[in-house]
Structure formats: C-alpha cells, structure tokens
Length: 560
Image (cartoon, rainbow, N blue to C red; front, side, top):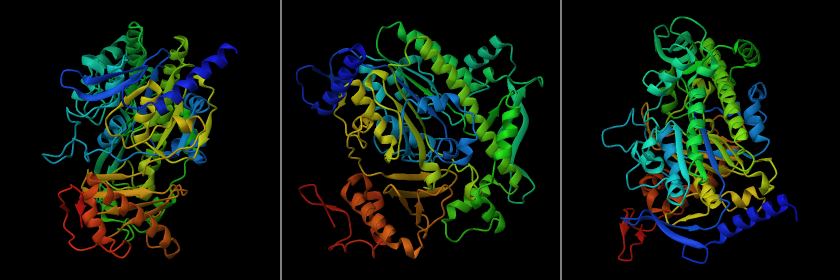
C-alpha cells in the first residue's frame, strides 16, 4: 500500500468512526465541556492525530447569478480562484440558508440550529434578540475546546460575546452590517503602508424616492482615493482582510495545533467598492448584462403593486427605488465586478495556503450568508420575504486530497444547518446539544444521505413580515403571516414567479402545505406559526379534534 492509499484509508476510517461514535464515553474518546467550571455544553471528542486544518470562508449576499451552474451571467465572469476551488470540491448548487437576513443566517450557520434571531440589530425593535445569547454555543467553540487554534477575520454581526468565546480576545469580527472602512485602525494603517488614501466614490449608484426624482439609497459604486487618484485593488477592504487572515494564520501555526480559521468577507454586499483596474472587465460584463424579465414586467406595470405577491414586495420596491433601468444595469454590473474583486483576493489566500504547504490536506468550505435579488421583481439586496433567489447560497466543500473524494457538482438539497455537523464529524467532535442539520460527510463520500426537513423563516427588516417556508427540492412554498398571499416557486426557474394560484400545481402546493403543517405541529419550537397556519390552511390539513388552544397534559404532551 502506497502512502497516498494509506492516508486515504486512514481518513475514510476516521470519517466512518466519527459517524458511528456514540455520545457516551468509550475507548479512544474523551469527555469535556466548553465551560468546565459550569459544565455547560458537554461533548465527547475522538482522540488521535490527523485532525485537518479547517478554513471556512463566507461572502455576504451573493446572487445565484454569480455561482449557479448554467446561469449566463455566471459564465461571463472571470473567476479563476473560485472555479479552481469548485473544481477540487463537492459543489452543492441546491444549498439554502434558513433566513435571508445577515444576522439570523449567520446565527443558524454557526450554531447548527434554527435561530430565534429574526432581525438585524440596525432595525430591531427594543427587545428583539439580535445577538447570540451568552448561553448559546457556536461550533468554533467546540473546536477550540478540543485543541484547535481558532482564528477569525471579518464580519461578525452577532454581538461580540460569542466571538470572544470562540476566538479569544484577538477576535475582531465587527458587529455591524457594513465594513468599518473609515474607523478600522488596522485597515487605515494598512492603507498608509501602501501609500493609499481612504476611498471616496468616483461613480455612485443611487436609487430614487417615490417621486422618481429625488436621490435615495446609495448602493456604492466605483471608488477612488480621497485625492482623486486611482484606488488600487490591493488596497480594497477584502484584500486587506485576506492579508490580515494570512497574518492570523501564521500566528496560529506557531501553536503546532490544528487550525480553524474563519474568514467572513463583506463583499459583494452593497454599498459596492469597485477599485481601479477592472475597466476592461466592466465593458465585457456590461455587454453581456441583460435586465431580468421580471424587472421589465414590473416596469411595464409602471411599478404598480402586483396582486399576486404579498405587500412586502411592493414595500421593498418603494424602498430601493429602481425606477430607472440604468440604475439596475449599473447595480448588476458593479455587483458582478465585486465578485471578481473577491476572486482576486481569494487567489491570494489560496496561494498563501499553498506556499505554507496547507492547501492540499486542508478542509475548505465556501458559502454565503444568503442570496441577492439582483434586479428581479425590481428588487435588489434581500428582505423579509422568502423568495428562492435570497435563500439560495453556494456551498463548496473541499476535503483533504488524501481523502480521495472526487470533485463534482451535486444537486442534492442541503442547507446551512448541515455545516456545523459536517465540521464536527471532520474534527471528531460529538456535542450533546441538539443540531437541526446533518453531517454531509456520508454524502461527500458518495453514500446515502438522510436530510432533515428544510425550514426557512423571516421576521423584521424594512418592515415586518413573519413568514415560514419549506421546499421539497423542486418547489418552495412560503406562508406569509402579514399577507393573504402565499407563495409557490419552481426552484428550476432562474427568475421564478409566484405559482401559488396555478391550478396545474394545486397538488404540489397541497403536498407542501401538509408537510409544512406536520412539521410545525410536531416541534414545540414552531407552535408560534402552527396556530395561525392551521387556521389559514384549514381546507388542506386534517381536521383538528376539539379545543384549538395549545394545552399541555400532565405528561407534557400537547393537546389540540
């Protein structure tokens, strides 16, 4: 047996042992707690050498246009670093987040559980939870407790406490939706080291107020230095984050421990910061750009409300003010260019891993917190509605080369909730806490996969719209508590319209309603939706027996 075959067999045996290992103590496993003094968050951990370095990279609010196989706009982009990663990964192109807002999506990804956070802190009502509780646990905490040197760089947006718990006092995840480009002292020092002055906009993209004349929201745009000189790409904030991440990596390597490094990039989220040097790429992208058919249809209606959609969509159309098609074109072009900026930064990061001899045998996971409308329905960004374009996320998982797992594009539906269980299995950690996802390691190795039901929800952003959705891999059904309109989307459509009223899909809708209702009824965490759901879907669901109020019998089981 050669070294490669031996290494591959050890990795496969480790993965199988991890999958079968019970929580109880056993030979080769040790018990522990994230907080040994309080006994909080117990776990067992498999002992033994060979735990891989793990790098988790997230970008913020990326459109499926920029990663979904088969989309014309994806094919027009110059993304050698990301395509190189995909070519060595299992790339799940049917992956979904659980909430289309930054903080809730990140909370679910890091905890491995559906989250109680339903709003970002910038727009939350007093009393809304927008930060993870001190009593929560996120998966990097378990890695730290079991011997990993854990590091973080970039966006946090979940409060500081959990990042300090998981990454020590050197954690620098900023707790805000946009990057601190004017207040980050380390970034400003980085600019000075390059001889570059802070940025300002050379060309700025603006929406319009409802009078269709007055400038409204800024979407950022193309940047220059404060003195009017070109702003070099290496000075752009994502490139700074990569440089900082590599410095953190070098510090972590001194510990001789396995490394977990999490790099959370703000781009391509608006406001855009497109540096100089991409002028030819802009021409090519602009020539290939086509406005979405659903935008043109809304414009043909003169932006009047669509009776087939919940009111929240019209609310966001007023908020973004995309009355001028040139604004939508510029937004889509800048958005695409921002992804190319990310790619050039990640090329530097991957090259850094290769120069340190880490790339081949490391686990690399690439994803986004949520998606982006990118002009569809005359909307950009995201919101508190459950349209497939803002629920879709890329998910690429590169395993160590010695694992011998072939790269492929996998259409299996998966979700953010599967990331934490996957990392746990790769690291040999078995938390006692409940997880709402499943490890993808069997699927990665070509074996059968038993997913848990997919649930997405949202609550409060520009306005309130509490909603919950479920999909079956081909269609997604969304129930909006703030509207009489439910939604049904074909997940195979790249500009999907609401099909909830289609007679041809009545059986599909009924099947999803029944499945969603059964899920809500069975799990006490979802009773907040179940009471209204069964009233609004009375004709779809089995008839309730007796009292409709939520009660508990002495056994603790719910009645009604």
